[in-house]
Image 1 (cartoon, rainbow, N blue to C red):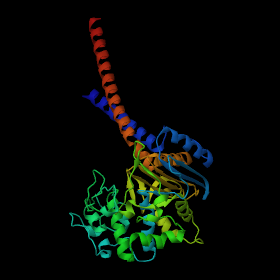
Image 2 (image 1 turned 90 degrees about the vertical axis):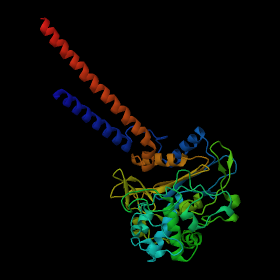
Image 3 (image 1 turned 120 degrees about the vertical axis):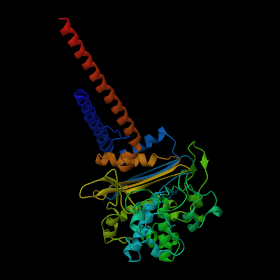
Length: 429
């Protein structure tokens, strides 16, 4: 029994050490290799252009910033020419911009972050649940901690005539991605867990309309885009921009159809690299320039509101990609949708460096490039890169645990056999 406990203890210690080393190694990028090590914007972009040859990307618009200034741009197209004024759908990057619109209402005293949202609603209300719906607040909707379990995911509609009303989409989204709960409903206790919710931002869209008395698209244009002179940004489809929109592609490289969204705040923003560059400049701490949010309310968005695995991951409408000094984070958002498109926005508030990348025809090119940009500038694995490596990490841990278990059992067996042989030899002698 004593020997059994000794080897069991050894196995447990080795397993714990192995698991911690693999986890910390993955989290800190000890053995991660980025696609390039180039930090200078022009050479970084040259590396991106090389990377484009390794896979299909239909269109790309890329801007890289250093010390708060645009250093270089790069474009790629498979057919129709793409430039800084080409309009891209940006999928969930919409949430980052939409959150600025919500926070403008908070700044103006028209919304309170911490009161029950039901006091702002007349057109639709959260269905009754087994939890306290009064704990659903604007802060929790913005930070994906409101207990909503929809998991949306909007696939959009191929025709404008198929668009749902906002209220019917919240009740049952007919364009939900496969595997999503089509209902916006409280399914877990609000405030205890970060759970990404497209439905939460669709609910914020309704709140903005109720409080402002305007459609979400009109409100965002008048309160955000016009102030920043983002002249080619909109949420509700505008036929005037038809010829300016980047082509959509399927994963096999064939052309895909345009899609339209009821869930505008969550998924539907159309914008350009030029317009997002103006948004990037507005993030700098300069109260002299006209911009929608004061520095105080901007920084409020970048404070940690939610964690996963003990690590801050989300503020108010923004991912917290990598922790920096003084409780700061690289902030921004990514977007991903079908037909394949992928977008990424990263901003370092300490150095004022950043990257904006818009693509069609790929589900992950923009995120991978932006995550590697974070890694080569900070030496840290950002939140989405860690998530991409999670499967490999778990596999490595499991394989290691099996090897340790087999090794300890083998050692125990061999030592027992050697001891038995010694006993036999002693008796024979």
